Structure formats: C-alpha cells, structure tokens
Amino acid sequence: MANILHASVRKTDFVARYGGDEFIVILETGDILILDNVSARIKANIEASNRPSKPYTLSASMGVAIFDLELDRNFDIFIKRLDRLMYEDKARLAIGS
Image 1 (tube, one colour):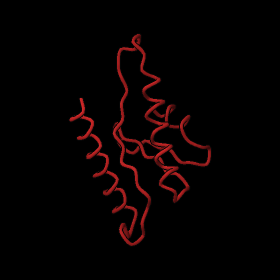
Image 2 (image 1 turned 180 degrees about the horizontal axis):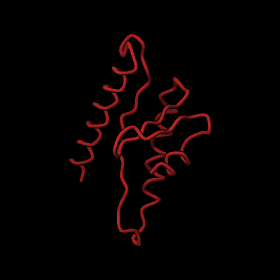
Image 3 (image 1 turned 120 degrees about the vertical axis):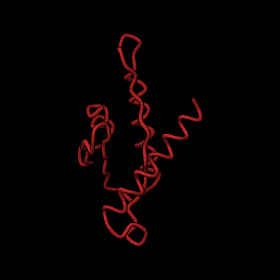
Image 4 (image 1 turned 30 degrees about the vertical axis):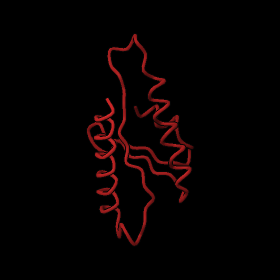
C-alpha cells in the first residue's frame, strides 16, 4: 500500500503509516479539486494493483479534507475529523457492496 500511495502523489507530498493499516497523506494544497483528483488517483492505482493471481485484494476508505484553522483549531482535532470522514466512507462502501 505504501508504494501505491507514494506512486500516486508528488515527491513534495508526505506519506506515512499512521497506525496498523492506516496511512496519512499530506498534500501541500488548499484546492479541493486537487484533493479529489489525488484521492481518485489513489483509488484507481489500488484497484489496478489487484490481480486475480494475488492472494489478497487491496481497498481503501479515505477521509479527505482541507485543514481549516477555525474548524480544526489544531492537528489532533483535524485528525479526528479525518478519522470520522474515513469511517463515513467505509460505511458508504459497505452499503454499496
């Protein structure tokens, strides 16, 4: 997954494992269209990596947001908001299955 994430973003963007199977990607942008394009690219690259010959299938749920100093106040609050958005995405994907 880390290789897919790194291949999906610019060299100036930040990718790191955040916990067990969670990663964080930080982009230097305030443009929601760029965020949407990058998240779509990540999902497409994950989907393209899935092959019938592999014994597993990768998937991803994402929380995507722009840091808002008034709304988030600090990084911990921002991470909690992203986590909530990720679980909402996970629930949407489960309903669509």
